[in-house]
Length: 448
Picture 1 (cartoon, one colour):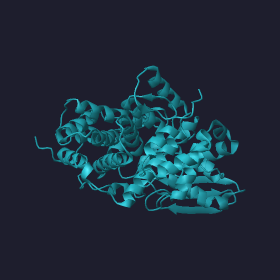
Picture 2 (cartoon, rainbow, N blue to C red):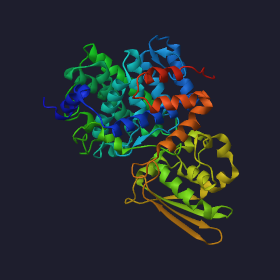
Picture 3 (cartoon, one colour):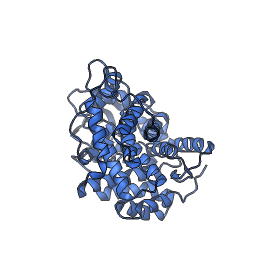
Picture 4 (cartoon, rainbow, N blue to C red):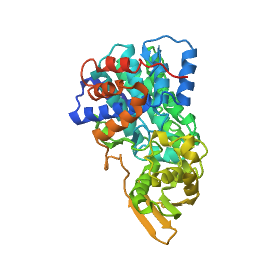
């Protein structure tokens, strides 16, 4: 059966070891690693991290793949735990076009298999870039947005494909095995946006990483699947989107060019909220010390579905609440990890501001932009528009920004080793960096 999309991807993945990458692409891959690792290590004591880690440890599976700040286990299980932890804070990088968080499932799969098979830094970077590229191109072109609007979370859908592609590179699969690995990963794709604001959302990332690794390992041992699934009627895109929606993106696959469209989060919450936080921070000097009557936020339709908790009662819900994030930003809080706490939720000033926030839909506003109007009690109107929030490719974070974010997350967990880990990750293209990284993140015992 004709299978142009799947076959093109398999050919691309099979040729991974023949490609070279620009220094800029290598730099972006390392940014993804630094950002993901920082967010993951910063989350090791989160309740969801404890639950997933202890569950896997209880199975007693021995292996050579490192669980972050824990023991070693089988590659698929390490990928499950680490990718869940890496998305626990909802602070990891985002591909806006898809939209999805690809670094967490992809890097989790890559590190688990690279350690298991004794592979080096160049192999790990090659696998990550290849896996990211396949998932990014397939997720672009409208299918990711349409999928999200229909209630599917794109991260586990495309994250498992990125993990399977990256794992196929590391395992040295041939073209037919790669097709089987991709098809096996695809057949169980899922994850619902109804889980946002619960532990189910980070589990999506972990499950995608695990199933991507598992699919590639099974394909290496002769497992076969519906290799036409990416082009067949009733296949991957038809099933997840339906109603004559867009199919998988079919742009040419490149040597990592998709990484230039990746974005990094400056705030520890859903990315759809970031433009509104930027707006609130811009208007705060004019609001400070004055009574606020009303706050009107103009949002894209998808925001009203995913980040519109009006009065969150749990810190995790606050990450998906424009009202909460705008309130704390207007009060001068930096909207970092510490701000999503029971203490912050109980702040009487926050409780006073949240009901004053209303949302209005505008089909023309970009999903990562914002418009905000504030009415002060003395009658003064305030207004601002944010075209693209901080962290987007058009308004990027610098290496200094990423280092500050990393240190704020990792130093409380690893102490003085935080600086060493950052330098090691930033120099991940140097020999020995992979082994040193895994040694550094294995050293700390977990608090119960």
